[in-house]
Image 1: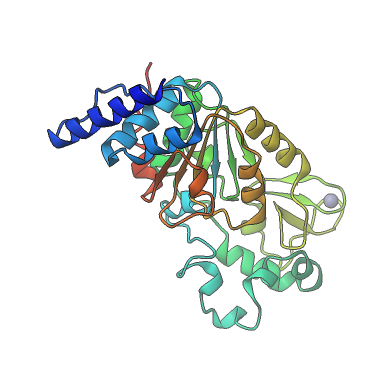
Image 2 (image 1 turned 90 degrees about the horizontal axis):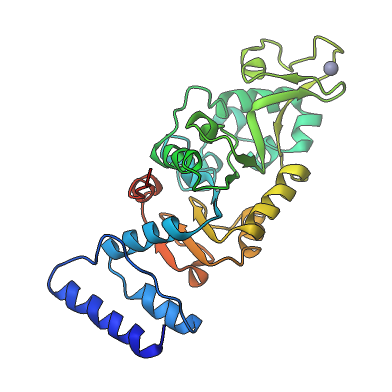
Length: 294
Ligand SMILES: [Zn+2]
């Protein structure tokens, strides 16, 4: 689309705004000659038009990927570790002498396993937590063939609970556990229901640990490698519920070079300058306004 027609279109948007009329239900996003034109177009949109643009992006993209962080789970009632009221700032007399980063570290698991499991059982039992609108919309997108997959830093299993099947958990899952010696896998209740201070494998007697990436550990390689491949292949990336301050999500986000980038997060994030659409809002509320065809 030429520069003149973009200017005409921007003018048309202004006129429609002035008349209090939204654009047509299906917004047509033009092809842009330059990044500057693209930025001007998206920055000129009203909140309502941003939702229309989001829907148009979803409608026209063929490989959509969602990259999510703690903010996706907070709307289900799980505290964000790093937020003001999150786990990392909670004063807990029992564990007060340890930093949360230590309590969720490989060091703690190995050197103070009783403390580790007490903390883990009290703070990371998410079995009764329910999925929310964002999880359910992503599952619907997957079912309708509009989502290649979800990449998540969360360990709560809420995407699967919401109906998603294509989920890459780059920090593992608190709902899985395994024996550190014989590698036998145990179900989601095992660590939480087990009454031993440190759960032991009935088969070989060694420790059973949660299948999560602890501080001081490397990310699970297959999940991360597959996440990289998904991101590189995507033509639309929706980043939600993360400030992109944690290394792995930020790294993945920087690997994206597709057509559309959308960020939905209540607070500011580090990559907003690169995004086409930015929503500082509830992720469930924004995702719920995506309307999928049959
Ligand atoms: Zn074992």
